[in-house]
Length: 370
Image (cartoon, rainbow, N blue to C red; front, side):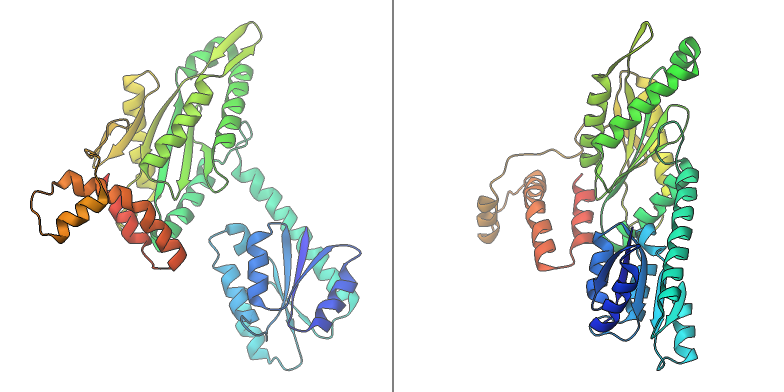
C-alpha cells in the first residue's frame, strides 16, 4: 500500500516522506495534475495527503476529480487535506463539503501524520475486505448480482457520457440441474469454479463477470458492441466446450447457451435492468433451441447472432468517392453501408488522436449499420 503526498513545496513533501518512509511506501506529486495521473495508474495508493494551494490543479480540483471518478475504488480514497495558517474556517468547510476525509495542519508533527496514515489505511483495508466479501460469490469468486448491477449502472453512465458502446451477456450451463442431482453439490461447485476461472481468463481487465443464478453467469463488456461481444462469448464457449473435467469416475463436458444485448446507449430509456431482461430473453431463446447457441437481442426480438443484419458488399472507397464527385447515379445503399463499415476504424483513430469528440457519432453509426 502506498501513501501519496501532494504539495508544491518540496520541503513539505520531503518532511512528510522522512516521517512516513519507515512504515509506508511514500509517493510524491508536486501538483494535482501529477497526483491525478499517479492515482489513475497506481491502484495501490491507499491514502492521499494533499495541499490546497497548488499550480496547474489545486487541492479543490484534485479532490473533486477523485470523488467524481467512475472508478469506485478511486472515488472512495481517503483524502486528508494539509491546511496552513492562511486557510480560514470557511475554506476548511468548503473542502469538507467537497468530500475531504480529514485535515492536518502545517507544520505537522510526526505523531499526528503517522496516526492519521495508520488509521485511514486500516479503515480502508477493513472496508475493502468487507466490500469484497459482500460483493463476491463464494463459489466462483465472481461478482454477486447486486454488485454486478452496481458495476453496470456505473458503466452505463460512463458509456452515455462518452458515447461508448456497452453490452450485457447472460450465459447458462446446459443441463446443469441434471449434474447437480446426479453427482451432488460438491461436483457441481467444482464445475462452476472452473467455468468461472475460464471466464476470468478470457475477459479483458475492464470487463466484469458475475454469477446471477445457480448455473447462470452475467458479463458486462465495456466499449464493446454486439459484434465484439459475440467474439468474446465465442472464445468463452470454445474454451468451455473443450474442457473435459474428470471428477471421481465421471467425465464432464460443459456447453453454454448465451444471450446478448447491445442496445442504443444514447436512448434515454436504456437501463441496466432493461438490458439484463433483454439478455435473459435472448438466453431463453437460446436454451429453447439447444445446442449451445448464442442469440443476439435486437429491435425488440431476439435473433440468431450469426445472422448479419446488413448485407455487405465489397466496395472500393476511392471508386465510390469518384462516383460521388462526378455526380454519378446508381450508388446502391449496400455500397454506402459497406464503405462506412470500412471507414469506421479510421474515424475512431482520428477521433482518438485529434480529439474530435465523435464518440457518440461513431456509436450511432455502428448501431444504425448493424
